[in-house]
Amino acid sequence: MAFDSFASFIAMEGHGPYVWACYGVFFLLMAVLVLWSLRSKRAAVEACRRRFETTSDTGREAATGASATFARVNVSQD
Amino acid sequence: MWQWFHKLGSPKWFFGIATRFMPWLLILGLGLLAAGIVWGLAFAPKDYLQGNSYRIIFIHVPTAFIAQSAYIMMAVAAVVTLVWRMKLADVFVKAVAPVGLVLTFLSLFTGAVWGKPTWGTWWIWDARLTSMLILLFLYGGVIALDRAINDEKSAARAVAVLVLVGVVNIPIIKYSVEWWNTLHQPATFKLTEKPSMPAEMWVPLVLSILGLYLLFGWLACLRMQTEILQREQRTKWVREMITAGRS
Image (cartoon, rainbow over all chains, first blue to last red; front, side, top):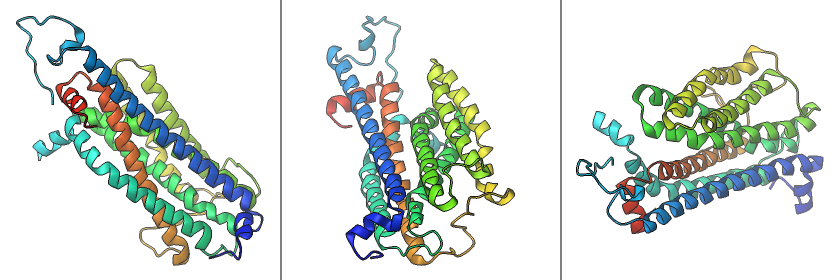
């Protein structure tokens, strides 16, 4: 330990406010970034799921609702 | 070789690989970052000149370092976008730009707060600080340009060109402390020399850099998966994956 007590750890010999402000903002912004990214992925998955539930199971063209013409071929782009 | 290259460009293949690696990136990243920060805050000895304020280094250097290397990675991806039209490269640029923006802001903020007790000022228009501010604007510009263009392919090309023009700023940031007389101290680490600080100081710094790097990798994978889901929602593999509950 570089400090004798918890109080001196917090005070950091007068530099406490600077050090803790930096770490506070760092953790806050990183947490916001992580939560935002997690939520937007969940939203994307949900959007896909809703889309697939409302459309039939016939494949990629189902979403547009267009009845397939006989010239249309389902080409997988995987 | 080319088969491997095309496989790498396939969103489906990437999605699967990312899902497999992400838990490891997250756990290792958080663990290393926590170890580096706790060590640096509580156990590393204090600096004889700057006192305890130097403990800001354990987040200042990692954020600045990764903000710059993320930009270099974006530039590589921009070349791939322009030359090979690989979709995944453009997905990477879009996914990473906001992360780079946050990291650049954090390095500027922690630098300003560190500057107050050390230099006596929050901000000075010094070469290192100004070039880092330009990096912040470049990240902001990339995000804004991408949102301004509706067509996906035109947006990808325009963003790639902007990223490549901006890459000239990276060596300026790197060498600003040597080319000009700046208030900022020179680089903490050089690949060719032993660090000038004792091991109790640089080991936790290396740990937090590695930890934040892995966390950055996790965020990049997560955000790329989101972007892929939005773009490929009409494809069969996304449909199969979502209905099977794997994501």
